[in-house]
Amino acid sequence: MYQPAIPLSGYGGWKLLQSTYTRQLEGFTDSSSVKNDRAYLTEKLSSPISLDDFMSDRRLLRVSLTAFDLGGEEWKGGFIRKVLEEASDPESTFLQRLNNSDYTLYSKTFAFQDGQLSLSAEQVEEIAGNFEAAAFRGAVGEVDNSMRLSLNYQSKIVEIAGTGSSEETSLYKILGNTPVRNVIGTALNLPADMSKLDIDRQADILKEKLESVMGISDVADLTSIDKVDKMLQRYHVMNTINDGPSPTTPGYAALTLLGGGGSTSGFGALASQNLFLSRF
Image (cartoon, rainbow, N blue to C red; front, side, top):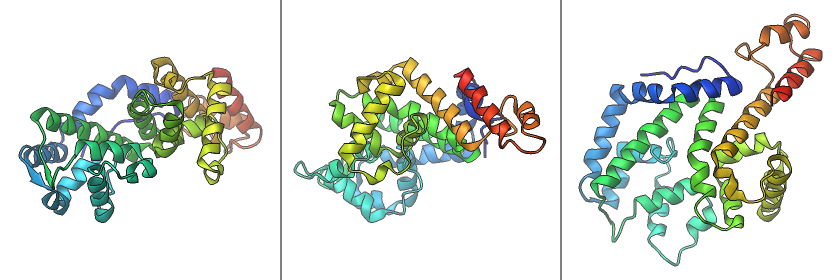
């Protein structure tokens, strides 16, 4: 199985991954397991399928969920069926209350009508492409989870904040998407126990932080290329500060010496924070 190459951690590693992304994705999708899963998905979805047959096909369920960054949740059979069934009920508020943009998009794509699903060739091709990209993000996460979160953020933020939704709705979507929330929470240094607060208060705090730290008064501005890069830069800098430098951190050897040999605590940790903040 192809393993993504991520020799550096932090923002330097992220920029390296970006520069090699296309080549690495091509190498990943050329692996036999990925090609076989894509072919299986395409074959099964190229003709009408019933909800019962869809739900009973564990491989199809796994691959289709992976395409929407929901890989590993195929064991939630009853819950997934409810998501798909409730989506066809115009009076249902289940998905709205669930507040999970990945499941919302999944249910809209796999829109069963009277227990049957029929997709066009273009839709099947799009899902297959999404599967390859999402599976690659998962493989990246096995090497460095912060890089997976960054790829997820880059992939999802336009969908979440740039859909023409109201400011309030966009804030709720951000709070409801775990990878995006993790990136923004780390980048903005949001309180760790913020999730215990009422959702409206969480949205207020998020909006305040976006304005004070990022200079963003309109949530839709998060989708600009400059703001995406700035958010991910802050995420990796803050992540490095919180976790401490690793052997793959640029300047690690010097920081180790400053820290007194084998440790980066004390003066060394302070030096590492100053180093990264000065870069930022």
